[in-house]
Length: 70
Picture 1 (spheres, one colour):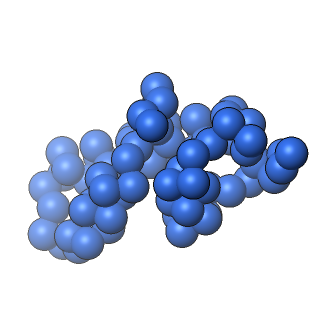
Picture 2 (picture 1 turned 90 degrees about the vertical axis):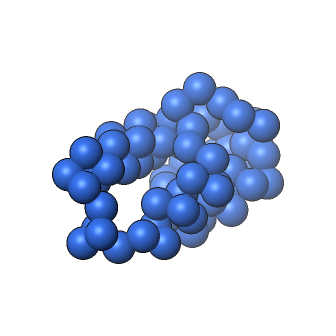
């Protein structure tokens, strides 16, 4: 399930796999902005509405500040 503002787990892993030293400034800036938007969307989305993949991705990236578990 893809939600507005959420970055897919595949995109997160792909971005993390490539070292910043091998990325252009544009790629680094894009990753930064996407990460911030995803983190904001993660906090705004209630935990009970997240898919399992989103929960796993949030836990792996540390974007699991929304502890609203129902």
